[in-house]
Length: 338
Image (cartoon, rainbow, N blue to C red; front, side, top):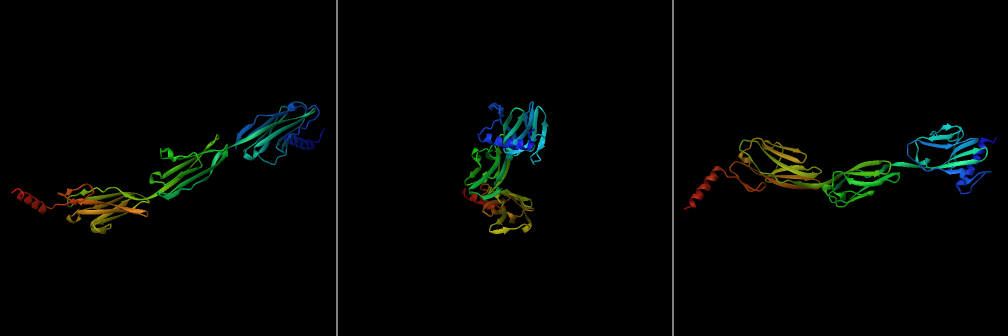
């Protein structure tokens, strides 16, 4: 009987010649003795089973990966703990490789030596890898009008397709079938969460980027408020801004502070309230609200008026007529009739 070690070494050398296109044959060997199985496609992390038939009068058998011997009969040559023997009998020779990785991809050969001739069965293993996003733009804070570039890089096999989209938008122009999403002259309306999706035949990987757009305040038109003497009155000022605006209140050119003459100022996000708990005659008049952040400011005017005042629009000027003034107007009207 031949030395098993020598046979395995010679088998490996012979297979190497066969792979290089130089067939090595023993007496009685035919071309049909070397079989090529269909490719096996397996996903990364799964378990691979390699099996070949044996038949009668087998003297030696081995599984090889390229130039490396994995098993020679029951003797394990591979030092890889993932490789193990499953079945070895007269019918089949099966080994398995657990937790398959890309490095396991390639050609595997089952070499069988019978009493008459050697034969080989080869199979090519293709390892598929699910997509994984490996480089993604960080969350961004930019000023309105800036040019923005979002980057998303992913690995996988087959190579994954990359798709960018803005989650909260229906505008198709905010999507891209590319690793790069360009947003020129960004506006406040394109702030939000952007999603990158990497997909291949195996799986999908999704990650998101939050894009914050800073812009100066814009203030809603103030609504004038009519309040009876002694009652509670509230002036409201609403502003849209990023970062959130700070509010300032003015009566003519004089700034009003919280607690000033019994007035309370309460800010809550984009809304500021100026509250009079006991409106007096001196409180009637024109007030200004100013919203300020690091990018700019905006303002609006609001009138607090009492009974008998004639309003000129919601946020325009108003004329407050006292009872004495009303009497003079009536007398003037009567004189003009004569």
